[in-house]
Length: 534
Image (cartoon, rainbow, N blue to C red; front, side, top):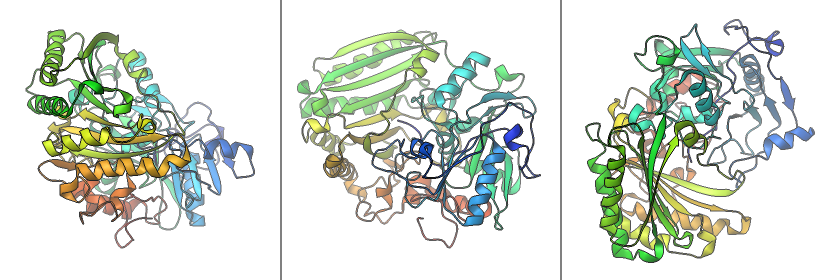
């Protein structure tokens, strides 16, 4: 699961009948297709229910006074301006994949839904690909690849909206080869409101200076829901030259993969420990760009014992010389270490099919996810915690799991200050998750995942305090427990866990571009002098 879609925006173009009468003079008009809207809905409209009860996480339901379903940047600007004049708290929905209740929060009075703004085009004036931030990753991958043979190294869930995914950094199967999505972000268009409540559209790019460049920087990993409504993203890789076919990474034609599985019934504590030790050490050895596995994507799924299985998956470009032998060697090392029966399957899949067939989350289910960025593999104590906790509880925990994703490679080749994604020294991203259907299970399921997380981080106050072993947490996997002293006893604030040393810089951007603090949530960037959450 990848992607916080709490506040990322939408449209890319002005113009068309809906925008003809109102965008501010500072907005750049572009002739384009007709657009939807404006559509403004209140609770009395039957369409309101469709836009307020489709939440990604069934634990949360919002009740805004008004929903703006916007179809252009001009409409987004006007919606922001109306909210500013009313002093109303705003949230923005792109793909709607927020892990917490930042959008579906009863305190939100105005919801700006940008999901109908989903164009993916080439902008010759900017010499960049323009992606409206209501577009899903699946649409982006399909259009960029079929149209120009290029892609972005984003996440594996095709229904995630690019709005929040990009704002938080964005990683996926091609990131060890090409870096994060934000490493290819050239520009961002944002609908903002000034201190007087006047709305306008701002374009900030990698080439901007002063406050505009800081606004671009904040969208390279500072997280969604903080500064305004992103109306489109502009993508062009640094140093790219020539026509559109050379401006972004080219994906492999096909992906060769291996999946190795073990049954829980065959894994006693000793075998489980051997397997996880070997897995961690193997990835530590091959994290750098000098490894023959420099471009490998790899994941480990530790399902609950009642699910039956643990699975390690890895993939390489099928055209890479020796890819089959490299994957065979990877599987052989892990299976030898575990020393128990296993299954193994290999396949070769066209690249586009591989990404469009990614994880599809059952929207509306209740869940709780918690993030850790690991600089080192789990130690033996933590492996013991995982073994014991994944065997705790009955069938109701069959969908609980821990997911481990290999980082490093090109991700870690970028200086941590170059973008607002500071975690450029991590080996793994771990997601600890419980998923359930019925409300009456909530207390038990939440306790299960909280106890697991607290046990893993027992040495650092129950949370992954940045140190030699931990990098912190990933902002696209928000977890309000990190701001709660009942669950974070480390005295290290959530802002350090997510942003490390960059939070004060983000606060200055916030003060400049959202002086009215319209865009806020429980883990949002706060202007200087404001309380830590909104």
